[in-house]
Length: 194
Ligand code: FES
Ligand code: FES
Image: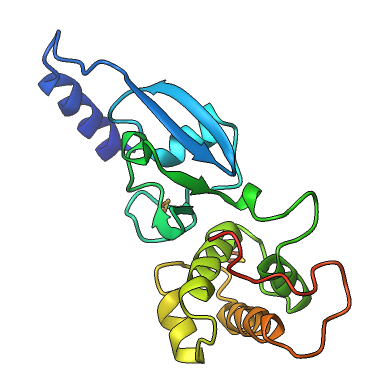
């Protein structure tokens, strides 16, 4: 904590009075809804989503861009929202974990994690699901290695990687199963919203 307060102090010391950037107007789509806002140019997308829009399913698990808990889709690509400025999302389509389910019906990747026990504490799960969704969108038939590489930017502190990989494999397989699965999500593509 001492280091943190020291760095805050030095940041404050270098702040030039009167040089604070003025708010920027942004317009973007979040989970299919148009949003307009005035934001500070330094505001991170993850804080905009969590604090301004109340979408707290996107987590913050580190301050070093390592954990991937903050992963969302930006125009269908998985991005770590702690490394994207809110102003960089201007004009883009963002999908967060809250946007995966459809009218209370689980997205197939969510269903796969549920059925295959792909989560323990669940803290990493929103980011894992968003990364897996983007992966299956670009690679509908991933090998185990593809999945391991695909989720390598997402850390699970509970270390349940075997079950996470199994869940992604299940989602991929069920999307291409000739037999319709029973249940409400039959036939939905795991990468549908990506
Ligand atoms: Fe850890 Fe974004 S919060 S990578
Ligand atoms: Fe606990 Fe991944 S399930 S951090």
